Length: 430
Ligand SMILES: Nc1nc2c(c(=O)[nH]1)N[C@H]1C(S)=C(S)[C@@H](COP(=O)(O)OP(=O)(O)OC[C@H]3O[C@@H](n4cnc5c(N)ncnc54)[C@H](O)[C@@H]3O)O[C@H]1N2
Ligand code: MOO
Ligand SMILES: [Mg+2]
Image (cartoon, rainbow, N blue to C red; front, side, top):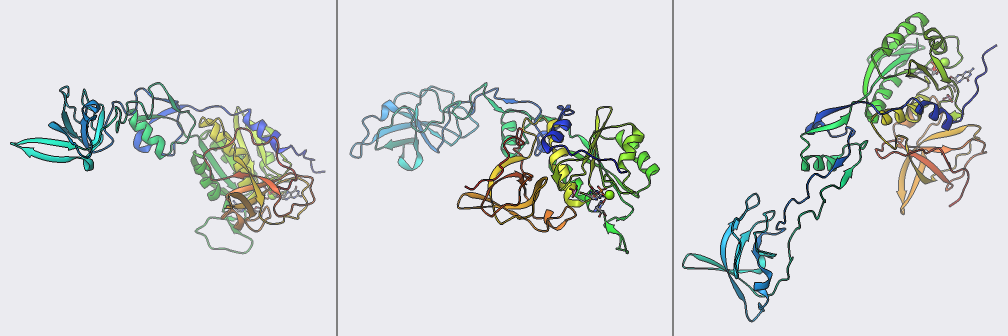
């Protein structure tokens, strides 16, 4: 008699896994290679930005009080006592009816409190001395970029765990991080099992298929922010697989296998866990696809037994492996980002288990629409290519109609969610 597996709710399965999650170690990388890494410390401003009052225009720095009597009829003339470009400081204090020719980004000279744009001035030279005239008065502070107007010293700008984007790179450079503290990328191993598998460079022969899962999963591991270690594909030979899994475990932080987790004669993962004396956390989840997803723990290390069916393997990775990778990378929101969308078409299949329908999303009149992205079996590979979300259809329904409000989990996203599994929308119309 085949062992009866008890399906666990998705949320409970994720919770089991997250009990093993903790922040990983940090390392320093050069600023040039920080993009896409995950920040390991908060960035706090140790200086104001800008660090001094500066000119936002090319023009003349003046004392506003000197301009008060200027009008269209009666220009006020200033003696030009110097010129400064960005990067230089005008050392003297500017006196009454003096102006300093100033370029964008240069510090406002001592004594000055306004800048006149070059286009609004009239310029002349008398006996080798430059003069500038203006025909309107200026108030104190006109055209000054103030010290600290962008960032105040002491502000926390970015919290750790964020993926470093180009804007964060700019902040890191601004605050002098030539070396950036980032979380070390966890190493995630992948082993494909199945005597039917060919590698992509091999020609098809009867009964065989190409191994797509290992390559797909490698890409998912990288998208999640981790480093891949591919151990290869192996036939359904129990002794070989035990050795390979044992060896792989010593070289990785997390290990993924695909295939062989169900109840078939050559589904060896249950026997591998038994041989290794790993504790099986669960071996059935109330979800489709991916119901056979199995996770085991050995000495605090997790082994993810993802399904051989490509769509099930893909979903299993995103729901169960990605959050732990993101937690190791310091994220406070390690789960897939959850948003509300309208269903783009009817989905009439009955739903005993919660379904994760691979979907394409778009906006129509400001409303997010999610439409199933194609062939919807667990074995499907075609619908993954255009999937940028999962539509979450909770179990226990007869089907869903177009325009019902549903939850979607976004796949190509860096923001994440804290805990997306409460309050999943069951049936509702907008
Ligand atoms: N009697 C039962 N049979 C099955 C059950 C069940 O509950 N009782 N569950 C079904 C479900 S649901 C799934 S999902 C699959 C899971 O199968 P396994 O995880 O054991 O995976 P395999 O048997 O090794 O392969 C399944 C399928 O996927 C193809 N495959 C495997 N590896 C790859 C790969 N690397 N790249 C592409 N495709 C791959 C394989 O050829 C099979 O077609 O079990 C159901 N059966
Ligand atoms: O685990 Mo299977 O993917 O539910 O179809
Ligand atoms: Mg099988």
